[in-house]
Image (cartoon, rainbow, N blue to C red; front, side, top):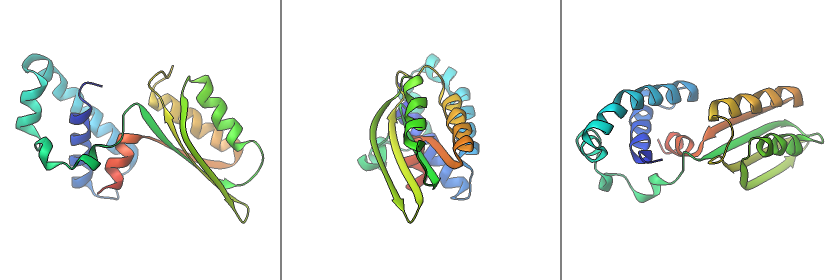
Length: 159
């Protein structure tokens, strides 16, 4: 994404103002709304002008804070362990043409926890649609599935 840095900066600003209590969906929607308002200006006047005038300079944001991509998603799954959880989540990702970049799962005293990092750059559906499919599958499986773009996940967890 050409304006990934701008989106990150907007996200960071929104998160710092709203604080840790802000709901993920509210932050995502607010960032999307702000970006849609700024995008016509970027097309007309160039991205360099908007980012240098409206947001902190690149030097003021550490290189570590730039980690994360809007083309990757962090998926967390929590619940009571039973067969088929990993397979069901992986099936949804495969159907959406998403690649699993990294996966870690554990079972502690019958409690299941899993984190998946997935590449969504070739996804056949939007992040919102994929998140909804995962949430619904979680309901069927009796587990909670949370999904968030990696750049937003990182921004929210650095504040």
